[in-house]
Picture 1: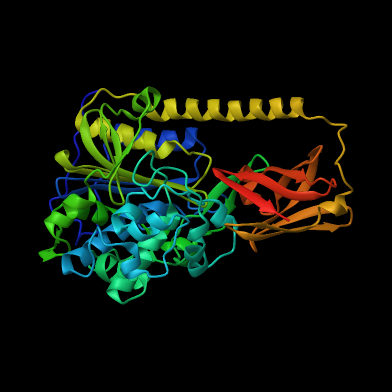
Picture 2 (picture 1 turned 180 degrees about the horizontal axis):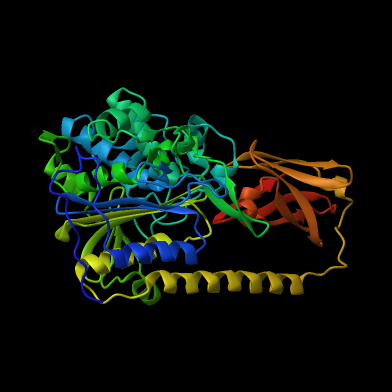
Length: 499
């Protein structure tokens, strides 16, 4: 395929309502990939050399409805928001109200971790670079019904998983929540106002919202998930308890502004938003991320991976790249910058059924812009996804084979009922009603406990949006044969609750 050239608008997109179109080959490729992956809708943003190349929607906002995704359709950007939190802190660093290496307790005196040394020495930089080394609780806190203050107060129960500032990165939404609240304290304003007044409004991101569910906007995309094998629209469910990790909702057009700003030196329309030094610091590697041969091959990485401040730092086929992904309810998103080529892109998708497509489309777009040989990245990603589904089905088959179907519970079901306390999350209540057991997770989600074998039960969450999180609950008995505790694995988080 011949190298594709993009039409650059002769007028700035900042004042124009016109948007350049992608080359027909690439435009058709994206739409074909959307259909092949069975994606209801997606939005793509591409910028280069200070100009908008494209901000475009594909497909529909919600299955069963005719409204199309366009450049103004609002998506939940989820963890792309971490770059906004880092930038807001950078503005406070510029003003002398914070330092990257301030102890967290300087701004949040109540901040406490299990390890006294980490408590006293953890800095804002440590939070932003995910190098505290304590367990994350990313999904288990989603299942609990805690407010921000309670989540921050429970950080002292997070167990140590890696050496402080060493070992492997432990990605933590809770750490970002602490960083954002520390910034809000230093600025003397609520976190949401900090982001809106210092970044979103000055950059003219007029359709973006902060700290609310993305569906408050009339033109919004619904997330989707496969529930009982059928793709279904699902509700918005932003984790309000950790807003500095996921606060921002945005559009393809507005994300173009964010990408162009990040590719610059801190100036915007003649006004300095951040210093050039602060911009550079945000993009500098802080914590090395180990890479594998398979990971490098899959992502086009030649050298190393690292986490900066709100950004991941890798390379794309030898070109320096800053990137981040996010994952709201039924809504995977991805953005990337190639600073030396002045390229930026964002892909936002409205279904959990396409977990690899955003990165695959980014690969195709970058290869097109760079004039690289074109590969069917979306097709390869789909094969990987189908293989992943096949592995999951085989794993389920193996679990079924290993199940001892005639093995009864050690005790009558009513003996398992009671309140079990997990140190990190608090009370887990198991109830026995009408011959069935239910589990209430820390004031939040609840589910039915279906007997599997012996003292192992499988929990089926009542909210089937989280069907993928159905898991096993394994009870332990005391010397008298009574249930004394249970353990379950929730995604990457381990729950250990004692009666």
